[in-house]
Image (tube, rainbow, N blue to C red; front, side, top):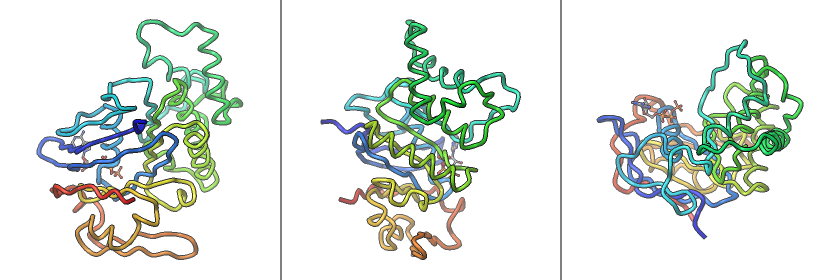
Length: 273
Ligand SMILES: Nc1ncnc2c1ncn2[C@@H]1O[C@H](COP(=O)(O)OP(=O)(O)OP(=O)(O)O)[C@@H](O)[C@H]1O
């Protein structure tokens, strides 16, 4: 069977700025993968390339073995930091319904099927009670659950979430991560979730995809978050500290914007067994 997501030799530049080069990886249906790496490493760009929203300079993405198409219902995508005005006159139900409108090919769903799809997506993220609430007045965690409902209402095979945990407190973070894990493991979706901190993902993700210095390493947390693997990616010594069940990647003073975009080597992907 084809992997749900497959990308080969993916290289992407914005003008003369190379973000990453020669990334290759497969993500199976039902798999929950955390996407990590320093600021500016290209995590959002990778998600956009998989969603077909930016065109790679080289390489290809396939979803279920077929070339990616823009606005396909096979992909649910939640971009980073969706701003919502407090007074926007949309309810939770309206927001989820918008997820059915973007992909339509001229034949709107009959209103009953549409209503049922929206209610099912709301139920899936435990947000039926938010259906009639104004979205601008919801908490960050409530809103994030509705955005995920919007992304899954068209029953996609692939779910791409760009920093859905930003600005959430610990309890909401855990709720959203557990929800996403259920969508992958029970719903059979392949999920990529971009996060800044690996700790809320420990014990929940199947794999991580770590991007740095234009290259990537993919494998379990224990396989990837090792000094030798990360030092190889960054190109200088990186420490991985474990304390009280938490993991800290100490990439030193050079970590951050200064080095994050640089020429990548041709052997850019380390996919660990
Ligand atoms: N539309 C664009 N045009 C030009 N450069 C861009 C564009 N979008 C992103 N970049 C640059 O590409 C690089 C990767 O950006 P991207 O947003 O993918 O990184 P990221 O890993 O998601 O970062 P962060 O963790 O800060 O959100 C950055 O240097 C960014 O400035």
